Structures are given as C-alpha cells and as structure tokens.
Image (cartoon, rainbow, N blue to C red; front, side, top):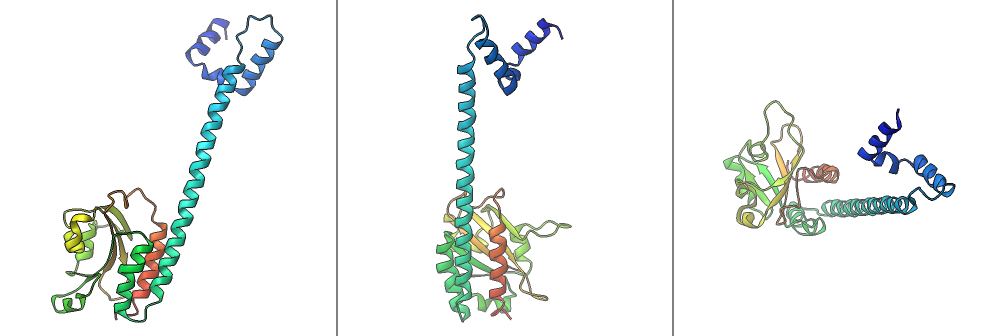
Length: 226
C-alpha cells in the first residue's frame, strides 16, 4: 500500500493506530530514537488508558451492585418462603401472605385470585382473596391462543385491574402475575403482587426468583384448597 493511502486511512480512522498497542509502542520507541519531529504520543496513550481504566472500574462497580442486588433478592425470597410454611390454618396463611410476606418482598399488596362459580364465591370473603369467574385468570393475564400460558407476567396495571385490586386499584401501578398449578382437575388460580411504583414490575425484568417463590407458594396453598 502506498504511503499516501496509508496516511489517508489513518486520517480517516485514527483509532486504527490509537487502539493498537503494538503500533503505539512502536511509535513511542520511534520518538525516543528520533530527531524530535515525531509528536509526543505518551499523553495520548495515557489518556486512552485512563479512559479504559475508568470504563473497567464502572463495569466492575455495576457487576458488584448487580451481584449484591441478586443476593439480597434471594435472601428476601427465602425468608418469604419460610413465612408461608409456618401457618397451620388457612386464615393464618392469608394473614401471613398479606402481611409479613408483602413486607419482606417490599410489595404494596398481595392477592390470591381463585376461579370460582357463583355458588363458591362465599369462600372468597376473606382478606387477600379475590374471586374470578371461570376462565378469569387467562382473561386477566391476556392468554394467547395456541401459545403456552406464561407462568410469570410482569407489567404495568391495565384498565381491568379493578378485578383484582378492587378498592386499591388507583394506587397500584404495576403488577406481578404468577399462575398457580393447584393440581390436576383444579381450576386456575394466580398469586398477584401489586406495587405503587410503576417501575417495580416490568416485562424486561428477570423472574427466576419469582418462579421459585411461585412453586413454593402453590405447594403450600394446596394444603387448604381441596
């Protein structure tokens, strides 16, 4: 390649030189052995190294923060699981669900939604319980035909939030919907977390810990929903 072509290439994209460690070392060596006509590149090299170091430090801090947050979330879920294993009666279980569990997981409200017929709705007259019509879980979540229903759905609350949150609807801005498997032959049910913070639950968030909690919760609640 001709010198003019090389010069034009470097002028068009200086990063070809500045990002190449071998080339930069060769240029600095040439300066040390030269006649003073070569521009001092040490300052440029130090600036770029400092910039890279700063980026690495920021990445390191982000990784540490994410690891801490994940560990904290895991500990919260484990504590919540231990809480739901303690009650010996259904009313105590519901009180634990809406009280200590909600506090541990830092959500504003918790609901257990059950699909019930009109004749069965009397059993839903308890704090934390919500009665939905048969098919109401799929309808609320927004199940799509020919697609496996989502186990966990994280989103902002919609126009039908009243069906679950009732009088609290206006203060709840985001929700986590956890579909429950209550056993073969049982109708659908779901556990719902509601938060006043609109960013508390969003579709791009991870749901591994909620998957684990949902599995533990549904096994615990089966003891009473016979």
